[in-house]
Length: 248
Image 1 (cartoon, rainbow, N blue to C red):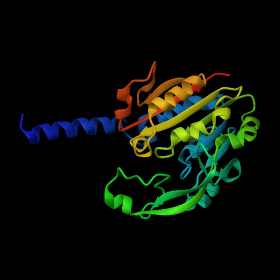
Image 2 (tube, rainbow, N blue to C red):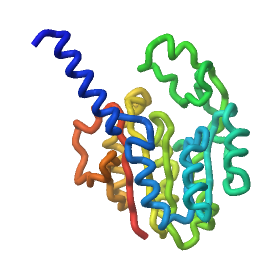
Image 3 (tube, helix red, strand yellow):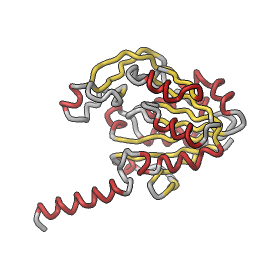
Image 4 (cartoon, helix red, strand yellow):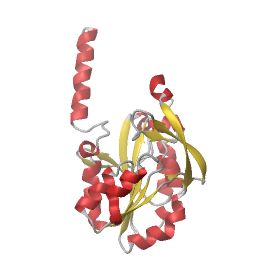
């Protein structure tokens, strides 16, 4: 097979994957929205970590307005619009969540203010990295909001979505007490190459969640797949989403 034929075949495979939601960041295609919809009937509070423009919280408001909303977003460029979108139905907290409380640098892209991370994203192209501007923000731990989360969840489940561009695991570590609440807890989190840039691994996250009694599932466009145990190959995925579930 000539090189051009091989490349064309590979591109067709990639197009099929994107069209069917694999390795795709679009939540309407990759199974994230589908999964969230399944969880909403049992949910009392939705915690949106890395709320950005409020896409996930917006879905919750539209389809389950009785569910409480607690959104965390540190990017100052997005706060007012997010508050306006959520209105009186949601509480917006303008901080970054992590495993310790301190002042930190949030890197925001100058051409697209919806793109930001606590890491400089050095794995991206140099031109992309050079266009990140530093913004000083505060980090907090999720456990600081334990009582508020317990009260707003009531007797129903707490559903936590974490999309923090490679810093999902520190958010979990800083919320160990919340994740251990005596009520059902769902955690939807993103895994991407940003984890490698920030130095965290799925192994750390999986073992942490397993010790807290969570069952791990992989979110796919075709539904949920059970994850019986961690394997090294999981670290090589370009992009994937997981659901961790723990009963009370």
